Length: 591
Image (cartoon, rainbow, N blue to C red; front, side):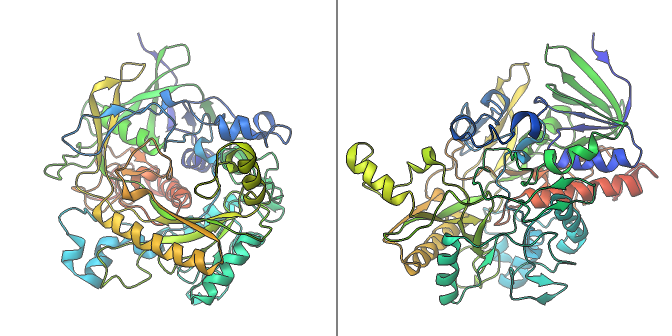
């Protein structure tokens, strides 16, 4: 018999960035909120204090903060005629191992998507014609929400997170200090941009000489002491370099633990259930609303959590899987393009170049997770694609974020011996003088890139695994090659003695090799219920009291990290629930 907990006003499934922001907003508004997370409780003072935070072997090599592969296993294939098989390594799925999700160990690049990213179909047609938007492979669609719609929510997320940066477009005026290609901002970042380190200096000089527009990447590592709107204090970044795969014992890197939990846990009407895996959303008898969720606790008990509102705020793949398992929305059919759940899976199209210099002192051990310089001259639609065979582009960036000695032993020029005295000499020299140009590219959805439930494989609870069918679009392969060639040109202008280009999209897509961990789509947002699973307020078209928030909502990927946009969408959903839905429950948009 299934045990049943007391009913809540809201149940939040997954307590990462999206879940914590929604839980805090709604519990502060007086609603009774219960969060359920698959992992254990993690906090900075207990799990990653300064004494253990800079442990490369524990956190970077052994991935101590990541969820075990059994918690993120799915099956994968490139094409419909292949048989999908399980992926049982970490690979591209670097989920958090506890509450906070990936927000606890992420790097910290804190981007807004551009106005073009939200209207990629409309703007492609307007500038290049219908044939470019409908090439037979791509499945472009607008978000149904614009940059201007999300700007207030971007602003609030940046203030909660204390993002360090400098505006490039302030209320429509180009400042000549930040990114001139960004959408207009209502005000500047809450903390000043971080320091310019040596690799950034070399990049800034070279790209400026080439006529480009370098700027410091906005970063979720606060540059000065800061108190956010929730009353939570953060300390200035010390540039220790231990960010990616690490917590932050200095309380400088923005995370749910550092920015939201201290306020959230004070709310008496909030509760969290950890080490509990939600397996489905229960629907009412008429199928038009949900009545709660079923989860399995750490000892195997099946328990029901009733609620009036269900917020799916788990990892992108898990949001989609729960919708499929629960019968919320029609599953997508790749042969007809009918259906909405599973549609428009995309990744992040990555290329670039490794660089080595002969005489310099780059000092890679000084840095922080998201710190670097970037040019957006080749991102999105910031350049004319009329004579090119693709749409989209990439931010071309260099990083000043870590000098982890174990990991850096792999960053040596091609042909360097992997052992012996020659290896030691090369490592001694090039540890100081290695850098990277990383092209973080857009990813356009295809008709055959989708998610569904695997017909064969199940997880440890007997629940079907998610099946991923995906390969890079021809469009994205062409874009990656184009931007890789631009990175080579920049590397040579920077004076590198060795320039070694790379392009992850020149081979079939695989989940096993880490090009990025930015997976998106599957429960996409939109104004048309025949092509989207959720409406512009993140509300399910199928069950009006289910809100689905995360990168699962993205119909296409921008040339940026997704976290800032996930945060903005979460705050938009919370604001909508608080100000509109609870006053008049029902569909917020007519389907």
